[in-house]
Structures are given as structure tokens and as C-alpha cells.
Amino acid sequence: MAKKFSRHEQFLRIFSLLEILSASNAPLSDDVLIATLRDRLGLSKLSSRTLRRDCDFLTSCGYPIDHVPLPRERKYGWKLCLDAPIMKKLLAEPLTLLELSAFQLARSHLRPYEGTPLWTGIEMLRSRFEKCVPAMLKKQVEEQLAAFRVEVDSSKRYASRPRLVSSLASAVVACRLIDVEHRDDGGRATADNGFQPHLLLVEHQQIHLFGYSHDGVAKLLPIERIRTARLQDGSFQPNGNAEHDLQRCRNELGGDR
Image (cartoon, rainbow, N blue to C red):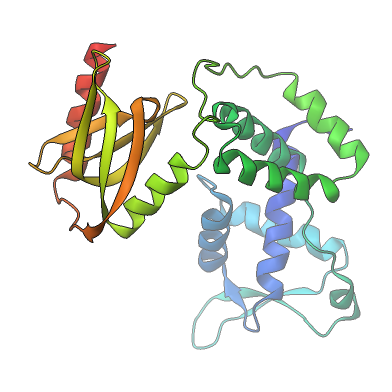
């Protein structure tokens, strides 16, 4: 039973190569295939030698892959004969141990958002995955995850405000002004009417709302301190200095920790 992630990454790369070739009617050069595979799989590097080895492996498995001259070029490309009988029996792309283990680790980091739409979405995706995963692969995932331990901050819980995150995200996307009531650092209630929400910063398993008050002051507000957030009819133009101001707010927040 193979338990090395590298073997599963190799399988995923070869299967993706087959899928790319099957979607093309023309031969593809090494450069095109390498760039496409790196972009699709997030690979840091992929050599022509490895690509040739993968193509040779697929050929040895019976897939009709040829190395043919490229039109109007003095080099060769890889082409899959789509009319071959074996091409009518290709299986749907399966999930791998690497993908499922990475997903489950990422899911563990979302534990603080149980009870919110974010957690609902991740659980729906997990349910869809498990419907098509064989029992043996599930067992391999469990064994692989035993090598990791994810520590989450159990004090950060957003289940009591399940719609707040999605409402704020909608306001950010639509550039809608909002009236925000929240507690300041001293626990006192305060209000920011006409607040311009620019983004939700997810960091250290905590969410902050970043934006500008009506007088242009950049603020980073912890979500758990927000009592209400009401949409206004008005909208705003994103601030061109938002990234710089966000980093400044993060630095100030870090100094207070």
C-alpha cells in the first residue's frame, strides 16, 4: 500500500496529462504541456525529461500517444489519438490520497467557523467527496492524518452569529456602505455609520473586517466585537491605498498583542 504523497502526486500529474491531451485536437509542445500542468497542479517545477517519461508511461499502458512534428515549427509535440477504442473507456478523474489528506487538514483549520455558512459549505463538499471515495482510500486518509495534529483556538467561535460573515462578505463584494455597531478595545459600545468595508481578513483562525470610517480612518475590527452590521443604500469606491493601510493596521494590531 503506497503511503508516500510523491507517488500520489505523480499519479495526479499523469492523469492530468492524459486529460489535457484528450481535450486537444492538435499536438502540444513540451513548453505548453509543462506550463499547463504547472498551472493546474501548482507544481513548482516540471522538466521536459519528466514529461517525456510520463508520456512513455502512458504509451506503455496502451494509450495511443505519438510524438509528431508541430505545424510550421521545427520541433515536435505530443498528440493523443482520440479515435482509438481505449479513449472511449476513460474513467472520470478519481480523488487521490494527497488531495483528500490536504482537504481534511484544511478543514481542520476551519473548525472555529462551525455553525456558519463557511462550515456548511466545507461539510457539503466533504459529504460529496466521501460518496465517491472507496473504503480502503478512506482508511489510508485516516492513517495519513494521524501524522499531523492541528491546533485550533476553541475560544474563537462564530456559530452564534451565523449570517454575519456572509452579510459582511456581500457588502465587501458590492462596495456597499454599512452601519456597524461594535465594542472598542475597552469594551465600550461604539458605532461607525457609513463604514466602507473593503475585505475580511482571515488570520490566525480569526476574522477581522477591514475598511474605512466615514471620515477616512482605516480600521481593522474583530468580528466577535461587532454587534450589528446594517446595509445602507449608498455605495463607495475602493480606496487605492487599502493594501498599505491594511498592513499598517495589522502591524498596529500585532503590537497590541
